[in-house]
Length: 273
Image (spheres, rainbow, N blue to C red):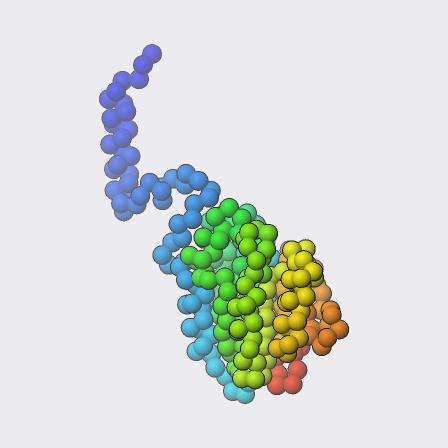
């Protein structure tokens, strides 16, 4: 039996009416046709730039400060929420760095879930892209929601360099010349920190790239090279050249790093929420 054409006509009119009642939203907002959508909401755009303004407004005296590092969130949103709650109650922490792998499959919904959890944080936070964040349309989403994958900022006479060192998923070689250019003014700062998702002794670095990264850390007296990716904790002078390396555990067990910076020392602790 054929369905009368009038049924289709009434259905179409009803659909238009629903759209109008919902504020004229487009069909792309009513129905999620693809999990690979990359259209970031306007209020979620350029988050790093907005958060940097919050950091720049937090100048304190003397120069001692603390920051937290979380890496490899993937799908551990409940644990992330517990970490956020604990950091909110720690008055010593001035800001938070997310050291890559915000997502697992780099779907827009994952980015949105991360963003919604981080909205409860009462301190500024900054993100770094990780290898999982390059999957699917992840790079496009990341750049819309957070900004460029390489950038730097200063806080309390310390210099932070956020370096995209993803080789495989980005299908490109990290910009070591950019990294070098950012580290060259070492004499202007008490400390220089480099945050890069993959440690140079990790799986994506070949011997040449590893040697290049390690030499830059040594040549420019980097105070601490901070990483994620390995999902486990490591802290040592890995290459016995005086440069300490810190790998932050993932938040599966609600763990993160708290780093306290003083004029003559840098102390880190792994905290559990």
